[in-house]
Image 1 (cartoon, rainbow, N blue to C red):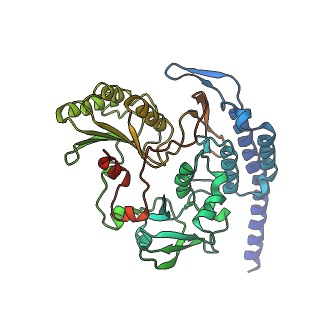
Image 2: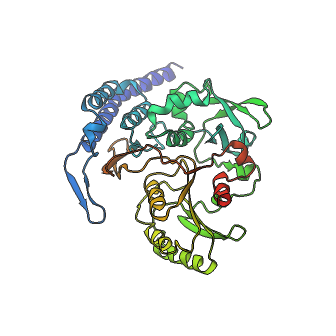
Image 3: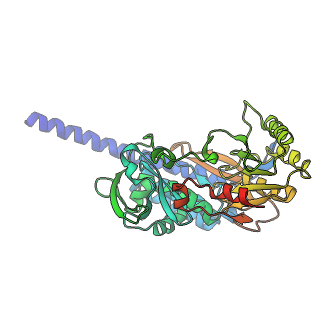
Length: 423
């Protein structure tokens, strides 16, 4: 027994010694990352890309977006507190710092390290009438299709206010869209003291009939598979959700004499470049003579705004034979997709249908990345300003078509239905 105790004490001494040696290393590594970030964002000068032209080396208008006094103060504060902060709290502080510019593109990408690994095995979505559970793991299927009444001790709106400083956004639409994923992370729930001693979250939910109940949900490996409303509740798959992995596709809807085009990413598919895709769509339009064209941008978070040009030009040449063009937008319509929606409205007299987009036209873009050398956090920043000035923070539809939870449960696509009904 005495030998065992002596060995245990010896091991403890080694571990204590190891911790004393390692702690300064950890601190110096984080401090090096802070300085790397500050230097990268504030870098002067420009770079030239033959395809995209001139852009800033560092963050465009750095001192305007991140006033020196407050930015430097936060870096100094983080450097002095790093020994007492867990990695996840440092990441959250950096997220808050990047979000302080109020530029939606400027973010710290959520890692799967530094305390950000486990998350809830359920997914949320914000509808016009509140937050709801829209995907769940096999052991949480009873939560599917319910309205969220409380997340721990907070209502969804209270939690939204709490997380707002940590989410880079320019309008409420993008904030809610991003927050629905952000509040799933264990590190975020811990930060706001919403997990119990067993690292579980008490969720108060309401079934469609009004019955309220509470479940205790653990934070788990993010690779746990979830089932969507469509899968878990055996609903018919909406047209708009039928091909989520394709950058673009189209289908003719005979009942309404409509050519439906879904444009999910402003990027070429190597298998079928967009120019070839546009030729196929225009040939189909010529052959079928549809009364309406519907272009769905609701899942498009951007890319290269020039990609859509062949389709836009082709439709412009056919305006005399097309009665109406509608463009569907929503919270996930972002960046170049917003620019596309604005241009389609201008050049084709397209009518925008749906809900507010995640961004307004113009503003800061042309994203570049900084990978911090030690933590490997990826920081995204912007190197150009587009447009003479930002006239509005959110692109709003001409024809509003909000979607409630009951619409989702009934398998209704309110925006597409509004476009098909419109005359």
